[in-house]
Image (tube, rainbow, N blue to C red):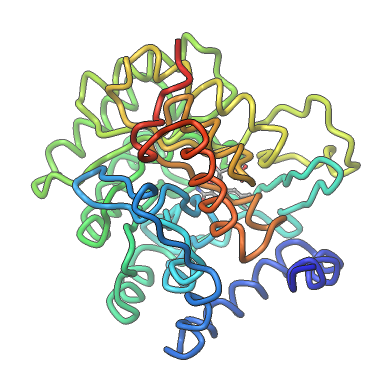
Length: 356
Ligand SMILES: Cc1cc2nc3c(=O)[nH]c(=O)nc-3n(C[C@H](O)[C@H](O)[C@H](O)COP(=O)(O)O)c2cc1C
């Protein structure tokens, strides 16, 4: 029995966001001194050469990262590194602070190993995030920065929002993600329309003197042909990759009473659709566009399936909540076993191995 399996029933008695805040405060305290940070690393880090992934001009020590939304304000990047993750995507960061939607806005669906959230881009804004990255220092593993617009922004103001956050935070980032797929922010216009996406990418192309890798994060709910239209635009602009996928507005086959809540569904119920989106993109592009796979990853098997479907890296949020601090270590140990079983020398050799 792990410590987390004893702590989890207590944490799950608290409202989900309260438990999340408490968990983050614990991680922030743990990362603030070297002895506690080193103790976490000694307990949870697992290194193996087969796990290393060279991508976006940097080396990921392993392919298992923390998805956007967990550490919106870059408060616990060092603790997440000590817990054995291979990278973290902070954000979504907006230009100014935003309080998001009213609480409660985060719900567990225990029977479904899922969550529903309608946080609505709550965050401290880019200046706080920038000064925290300066004060704390960037972590020793790759850092992704997920950027978004203010909820109140019009279509043209949104372009300016992305420009501001990109300029402020891209110097700290190993890769930047444009998030146009949040299902729980007010939509005054169609964020995913080809015209709007082109306007964003044109602006970023002009701003990106340092040649930072830029990716776009997509949702799981659009039909495949709309997803492929977006992939065409990604290729037209020579973007560096796609994060697939964000949360879902579907509710098929759920058991938990909390399925009635509105917001984005994450965890096990989105796993298969997310993997299918990864496969569709990888097949369409012949593996030429790197994919970060996210949605329902909570085990080595789930991570491996996304990698075989074409993901070069995976990320998770809900699986971390359900499985606790040893999540990354367990997944990475399991991945090494799966690679050995199937005769792959490295993760990179297994990327897309399950495609026709
Ligand atoms: C509480 C919560 C907040 C999230 N906030 C963001 C966010 O700010 N930006 C973003 O791109 N994705 C956000 N996500 C989506 C996750 O990054 C991820 O795409 C999704 O949860 C599917 O992964 P999972 O099944 O491992 O949770 C959030 C997810 C949750 C559960």
